[in-house]
Length: 132
Image 1 (cartoon, rainbow, N blue to C red):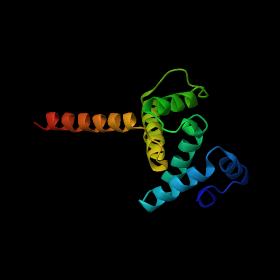
Image 2 (image 1 turned 60 degrees about the vertical axis):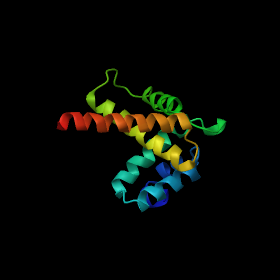
Image 3 (image 1 turned 30 degrees about the vertical axis):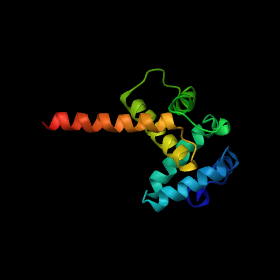
Image 4 (image 1 turned 135 degrees about the vertical axis):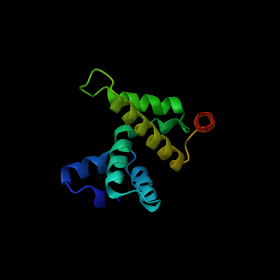
């Protein structure tokens, strides 16, 4: 899948040589099957490549804390010192796709699943409260 998305040989080599390449490729295939556009698939491939080294699946299950640490570790390399609204939405995107990737691999821990369900419930309650 990565070969279809990434055309530059040096970039492709970096992605294929990175950690969990087969797992990342399988997740991209899954995302393509559910209808993500090629441009979004490129973003997803970048996100999961950026966190793959730090996701910590070697101990079995991944928690939301593991995912947040992996995402925040990636931000250390940013040159921008202040957090902007854009960087918060980027962080949310990273957390979302890293979580979905961990779920797809079957290594998302129960505590993380419970946390995700609580967040979804809070969003629904917030939407209902705004509606009424």
